[in-house]
Length: 438
Image 1 (cartoon, rainbow, N blue to C red):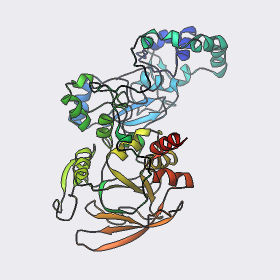
Image 2: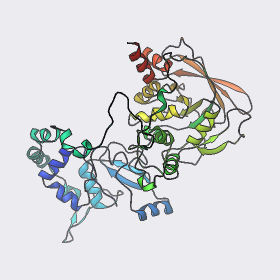
Image 3: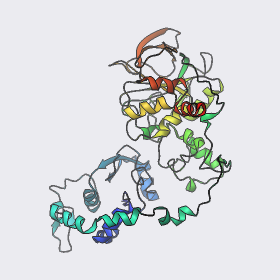
Image 4: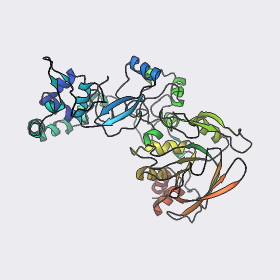
């Protein structure tokens, strides 16, 4: 069993020490590992090698209990499939029990030194006990202490050398910060809204694909495109750090897009972990079965022939954290449109902000109901300079038998300003052009 403690701030550590609770948490193995987005985002560290070996050997469904706010597969750790959200004291209780398949309302946590069974009700604090502890430990002075002169309290951060001047000097040797290509070939002229023709499918996904599935923040797998890239730069796997730590490097983050170890691309049934099938840019490119490879490698091969790409998905596409790289990475892979049964609100907006077209299937229609397997050539028809928010479009599907059919779809650009963002190929060039015009 692995335990860790990652409070939201140093204020929490302060009142845990004032109340004497931290001493007991340390004895139970809940030692401080960091603050903020640590355990919740998958940065609580590795499991014991023997535990990982057992999980792989026996294909175990390992479980975690956490008081964070995300319980997606592989979010806490890439080898943990079952994750249960609960209050902090309940997390401690399950740690004492040592297993999750237990009914704590009826079964004991364990026995005391005299052999007496101890139940959760024997340990659970009363509201008055909690109130008394909080009144004693949490005062306005606590917040003043930790948030006054914040910069002076972080000498290590202040010692990091930084560049000066009007223009940032990019360091090509850096593997953490790299100049992204969002402003390559920039001009003052916005683009044109036009139909997407001859597109290939990069991935077909089911319901509730999260932004963490699209752009993971946790550990980087050694055999993944991002892992191979970092090794090519002379970085050993033990020094990979995480996607979240390298989010300033588009070369890592693009390779990590759709590379979550638990993401399932229905184009490759029974698979997990960011694989797809490459069918070539045209009917004559590639065979009817497609060539299996990583999503990143397929995207790069399609880019060689300027083939536009499409993502197909089910309901609630982009649920979870409002992770900007889920949209940025999608754009940098060459995806022109995401066609889904429904979108999570913020991710839909982020896609538009990166110049990726969100398109919605009519109710009851999905890639599965249409019998799509990813070998089809897709076109999105009806896009033009006169496009309106929520306009109806047509999705044209050309099968391997060369037969074409169309399906009505709806553009999920919902406001006039979003049409401007899309015309400018995203909010970044739109804002830059507005600034330069002033």
